[in-house]
Figure 1 (cartoon, helix red, strand yellow):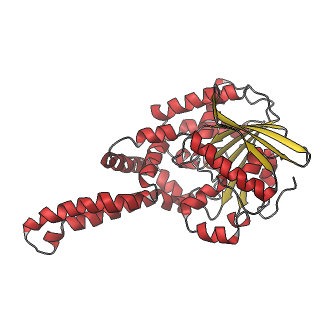
Figure 2: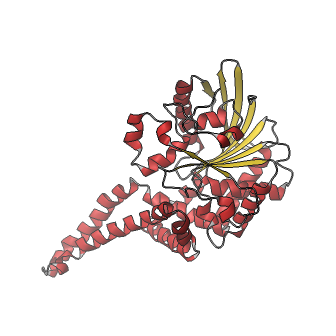
Amino acid sequence: MPTVKSRLVLYFPGFDPLDATAHHLRYQRAAALAGKTWDVDYAVGPLTNTPAGETFTVEASAGDWRTRSDIFVYDHNAVISQLRGAPVWQQIWLGFKAGAGIIAEGGAARYFRHAWRFGLFFIFPFLLMLVGGAVAAAIALLPSLLGLPLWLFAISLPAAALFFVKAFLPFAERFHTLHLYADWRFALAVGRDEAIARDWIEERAALVLTALEQPSDEVLVISHSMGASLALAVIGRVLELRPDALDGRKLSFATLGGAALQCAFLSSADRLRESVGAIARHPEVTWFDIQCLTDPIHLYRCNTVALTGHKDAPQPKIVPIRFKHSLSPERYKKNKRNFLRMHRQYVLGPDRKSGYDFTLLTAGPLPAASFADLDSQTPPVL
């Protein structure tokens, strides 16, 4: 198999509250683990700000091959931080309002119909907050519930507030509850093509067009989690602005734990669904979706293209992996019940060779499209 000497990577991260600097540091840690595991030298350069966006280079080498990858990070942390800027009570209210919008647009019903575990993930932060609110309300109403003197409300009401703010909210934040509310607000905005989402998409489409001006053996558009929706929206807009932008570029479109249907299942998401069809039908695009059963935060075994009304288009290949193949038994046992941690594993480093590795996919010598045929248990030959 011929090796790739130069690669342009357009990376759309997922829900984690990380900016480009933090993603760069995470990549460095993953590359260090991957390098040790595969006996590959990954030299990760510093993060720089360019006209095409924030980027860093990775010089990978082993034996007689050398590969340079230019990785552009298109995170949406600034938008989420903006949504998190409101007072806590307002974040909670707006989060529930967004959840109601997801339900009203048929998203929640489709989650449960096609991927019930993702449906449970959708309702989890709302149920958690309702439980916390119910316990706080019970504390506040304790004098009345127990038939005690009314003056005890002077104690129970502050106690309820203290419990909610000092005990429950810190516990809820262990699951990034308020961040998830902001994430669902942004998901709804993406589906509805609202200004806060459209402005972000337009800005990134312009950056991507600039990035595509540099030559490379191949282009890899890679996304994690909700980043799949954003990658689809941005590349779809790129094709609207310049229909020939991908001609001759050998582009691989890889979604990791893809949650594009998080937004595309909304009844208002017509423009996003059009982008799905345009990318699926593009002759230069090889689209594959890497999924793992032990990750509940994606729409497992769901085909994004078919389920968005494009059954006649070429369908992305669903590539199943198992994290236990890339992690030591001790590390896998420690993390397998942490659903947020398992969802992040797609972009974290391995300590065992397997068919899938994020650093190898984004910076190694193998053509990105070859990972569409990976076997989770079988390491590729470098």
